[in-house]
Length: 119
Image (cartoon, rainbow, N blue to C red):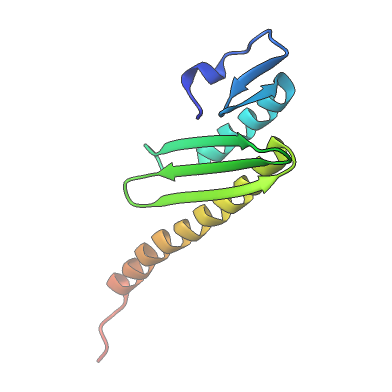
């Protein structure tokens, strides 16, 4: 789970973030991309990223909740960064679809209000 303390840099070679131990390089790469992804999310949403280590793989999950929509993805990969990249791609597609639905209906309503009535 991404928390306020996750933004701090530790001098330890490995740190426990997002539910697993990551080295500083892994953590910084994922954290940077998480920050960029959050910029694309609805305002005032909750954002939860977690990883689970299994014997030969990592399971990553992202759960984003907003007032009007929820976004969720779960992916499996050989390392946390690969799992995150797959999660990010899936969530970005969900966000894009949501924005298309959200803004196309507003655009259609705007055009309908501006169209002259049929005679």
